[in-house]
Length: 296
Image 1 (cartoon, rainbow, N blue to C red):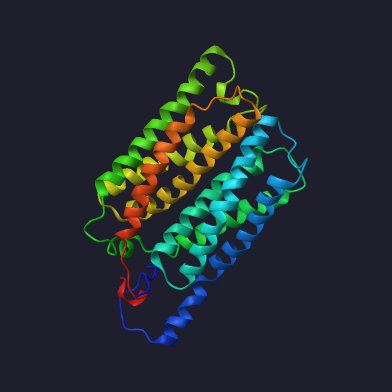
Image 2 (cartoon, rainbow, N blue to C red):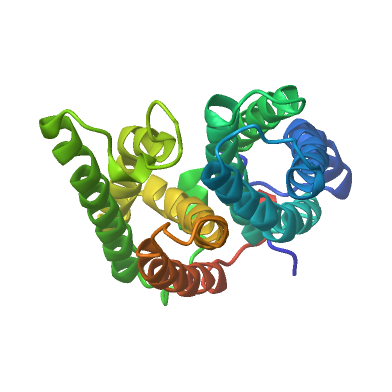
């Protein structure tokens, strides 16, 4: 049986096949946005990897960006395409993965749009940022968190996922503050900006301002078994798994370009990513579903 996304918030009632066909056009917009996004990601990441002279940044920042391009091309794009196809067929698991990949793209291309030096693909970066944002919002507003919560099997490791989210939020929050606070006190530049020539670290901004508070909040909500915790946990587990692979690839590319670049973050990100991947698989395995009409 196909797993169907719990979008409708109305009481369950029998639906005919024709009614279910009429239901699908409501999801046409996010699907078209996601499909267009996949095309742009192939263009941007392929050009970033193989077009000489495209990037006009410092060698270390170029290397980091190309590591991200590699993961986007080999991991994010296939995941986006596969989840989009399966979601269009009614898979609930695919909808969660699709939301998580869109969140990864939104995060990544916010960095590209604001902190990669202007180049011929600037409008592509802006378009990728916009498409991922609008597709994410268009899917989220159609989701029913209460209906999603009812689709989980009793074996879902709720406490384990919640603790993981809270630990990740605390761990990386403290790690970034360790880089930021001494620089503020000493009126210097954070060590993470060495060789980058960036005004600020975009990861610090996005993580401390948006991502880590959201990760912590989703962990708290899931611990309390609140509906939004179930939804956000799946999205964030997917997003952070892909992002973790991207960070590791970026660090390896950067070290290859400049052997003085530290690989100290790699073991931490590998461990966090592997645990997150294991929990994501457990989350998806325990996610059940049925026809849309069965979801309240």
